[in-house]
Each structure stands twice: as structure tokens, then as C-alpha cells.
Image (tube, rainbow, N blue to C red; front, side, top):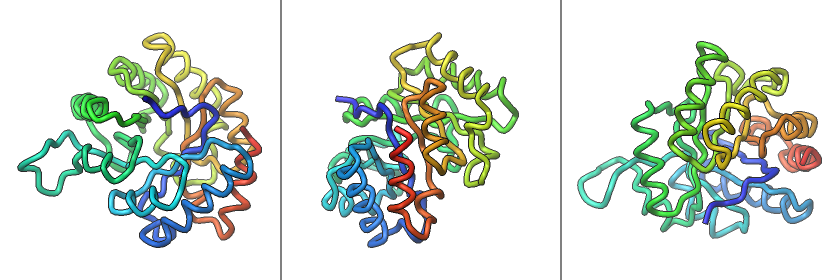
Length: 231
């Protein structure tokens, strides 16, 4: 069954030192605490080596940051979807801008994720601009992922929120609904406050995908509590 990401805050741990190994467990436990205290729908996406330890420590959903279309056997160095599930993950990111895939690679990974029961969030965003992003979003929506996360690459990790580009968000939501209204839309890049979260949801998305606003914060719990006010 697909993980429900309605009004969600998906925290991508990336490979930040503050969110690796024991630090990943500690940060995930903070995310879990805030989810318990506020009722917010918080999900964490962690490195493959941290999935088991994190899932053992928290009750919130844990996602992988990437999977490959590998199968049991001769696939040294690739991330096996079955192994991700065995470690406790219930979903995965696909084609984040820092690990970009072409449309055929995305298709193969969505298929493998469906085989093993992983919820999929496929990231989309083209540096060439809005029109290119919309075309990519439509192509991905046709592959029937569970969710698409629209993230303008130039805003990722920065201080300017995607919610300052409402036209992009509304056009992405409209494009996805035209292709397949069952596919949910998230948005991300520069999301750091409850106002950003509330605006994203107001514009028709199901939630947000963010990273540095939480992972690099000196007080991540305070940041998460503020973000939770936006949902």
C-alpha cells in the first residue's frame, strides 16, 4: 500500500554529516518526536547504509534516497530494491537533481519499486526553465509514480523558496492532473518555514520535500515544529 503523503514534510537527509550514521538516527528521532507531538506527517529519506538503524529507532516512514533496477545476482554496487525493503524502507526518492536519471531509467525504477511495494517520489525540475520542467513532469506522470516532487534545480539548497514561484507550482499541479490525477504532487527547494509549507499546500501540492533547512539547522527540532505549523 502506498504511503500517504497528504500534507507531508519529507526530509531528505542527503549525505550531510549532520544526517549520516549515528547522526542520522538522532535526527530521525527528532523528526519522530515532532511528528508525535504535532501530528504532522513527517517522512525521512536516508542513505542506504542508515535505513536499518533509522527504521529500528523511529515510527515515522523511512524512505531510501535512490534505488536501481537491479535484481538478485550480478549487480555489484547497485542498490537492490528488495534490500531496501528488507532494511525497513517503505518508499524511495527517484531521480533527485543530484542523482538525475533519464526517462527510461526512471520508468525502470518505478516498475521495480512497484514490484517490491515501495512508494515512489520522482523528482522533476529542469535548469532550462518552466516549459522544460512541465514537459518533464508530464512525461514522468505518464509513468504513474505515486508522487512527483517539483524542484527547480537553481533553488535547491538556497535561501529562496520555490513558493516565490507560484506560477511554476500551479502549472506543475495542472500538468500532472491532466495526465493522471492519481499522481500526487510535492514541491521543494528553499523550503524553510511554515509559511513556505502552507503556501505550497495552498497552491495544490500534497506536501513538501526539503533538506538543508532541517539537516543543517542548529536546532532542527525548533525548525520542524515551525514547519509543522504550516500543515
